[in-house]
Image (cartoon, rainbow, N blue to C red):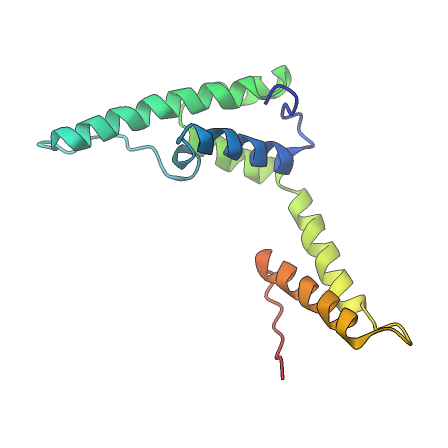
Length: 146
């Protein structure tokens, strides 16, 4: 994480590396699921242990996230205590390049034409690849294969 510090322009790569590190530590769940704020009265000892572990993992992941940012960006997020809030705000601010990816994929899909003399198979593979990319990005392109 030291080499790929988040600097405001590398959100996608930083997030991918963060997930790799957290998955190795079995703490990836903290990124996406809301932090439980209260334990119901009369909870089982297992639920109490799980609650305590979740809060401990949240604290560790919070520290990892802040340590993997540049100092000026750290200052924007160090007051937020729960990791999902940090991740949501970062996504809102820095995930803009995803828009460019979606635009480029749709543009390529609709501008792709089969070159004269080229293989129908290679053109089909290229179009199918672009279509699958659009499905991954949830662009809503539909295609009927007959």
